Image (cartoon, rainbow, N blue to C red; front, side, top):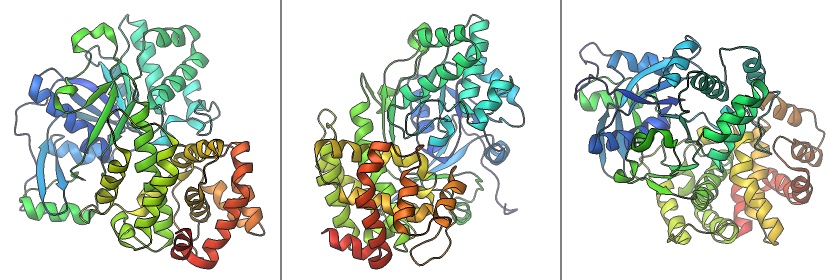
Length: 481
């Protein structure tokens, strides 16, 4: 920190009294959910301060604590920018240092919501089925110890304490990009609780609430040079700023624990959150149209040599590819939300992707592909196969993921793959003799591919896998028209 620059400090008085504990306080939630919650509190009051929890490291706590847990959110438009100091976070806890402090915060009767952004892998589930993986190392540890390791473990142990104390459960609010994320986390939590205490599982099933949500805002990772530039701009040092696009959309099923009455949630509807009975159409729209093509850009763009999403869509072969995959393969696969024109939404997505101010790296989006592929790509492929619709562009994405996940690009240069299954995926690439055997081995990973889908995809994915090696990404995309 430059000696001449003071740190941020609170400008609006003491930290707000907590009402929410958030597991996984990364950049996305701080640039998205925290801002909505602060807006709602400012407009209609209530004790809705956020206690953030870092499950894996103390880094976020260490960055925010010296500046009273406040931080800057910088909006990056195509030409304009705006700054905001966010002060809704009351505290940040490091779970590995003090699990008891985390459980105490979750058990506090004032805590009415526990939200989470722990990424797909944080749910310790089988991505191909959506069910709890009881053999996951973190789940095995949680079954043996009262101090949890995983996010599901913390949820279950905290809910057990609330039940024992005669307190109502908190609402569990998933903010991760997963289809039916509320149903998924509900199943994982009840599944783990059943292995610990069947009576607890029955209580959670009866009294708990797990609304599904759809979240949408592009938030690139903050780089050291971004921190330096912001300090020069503002004259104050912020070690944990977040950067985001102007667009935001949050859709939530309005199903919170009723025991808290009118205090069950902030007045989110007053600040633009869509509170609905069924979030599924919005989830499909976001996961398939935005996240699905984000993954397509990540793997194809990276293999084509592009660093960011904006760089990728500036390549002349990518915009036609994206427009065609939306129009012909993704939009026909699901029903639009009420009042939404999906073609207009697609046009808006392309404009968002092209925003040069958002330096969203293809490598960042490509992380954890084994967990993302089933939700973002394979569900659409399955529906298209059932309906007899061609899906050659989505097949191309699957083949590109296989190249990437194998650990080398199309020229044979190594890739630093970040994935919970990285060793297994790299082993497939290294221990197969030819392209056909390699593709077959990838498709045989049952944690990702259902056997019926794998069998149907095998001929076309093998062909495109080989074409990418011969013709490169641009050549293959041109051939698709």
